[in-house]
Image (cartoon, rainbow, N blue to C red; front, side):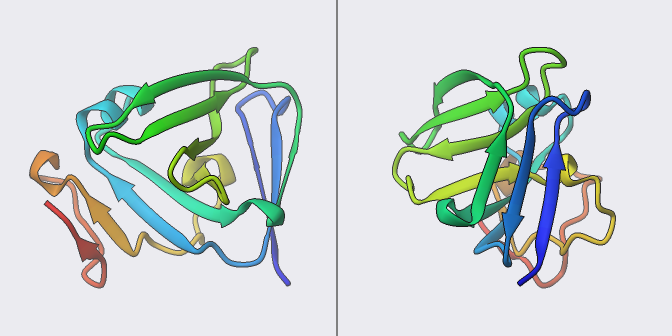
Amino acid sequence: MSERHARCSCGALRISARGEPVRISMCQCLACQRRTGSVFAAQARFPRDQVHIDGDAREYRRVADSGNTLCFRFCPTCGATVHYTIDDAPELIAIPLGAFADPHFPAPRVSIYESRRHAWVGVPDSAERHP
């Protein structure tokens, strides 16, 4: 079984994820744009029992446009978000793709909030798309 490693910018908050993600997605909602400081967020979701988290984290909760509550966990030293959970899917942990710093990580298979996507942002041709 494969194992991937993610971490914050300073390395104080680390994650090991075993196996393959159950979902790899990109979100163009305005809240994700603000949270990441980029034009979209990309993340992989893994079953909770396949994820090991090491290090302290602080939390930020918000209610998404969908009505779900999300709990983002970030490093108290460098501020990088390293994982988050969605209240209606407690069995999964989402990890931002950038935290893996792996240019060979598989592409997103789902793209959401396409109506808020910047016109110049490309989406993989094979991705399932949602307005």
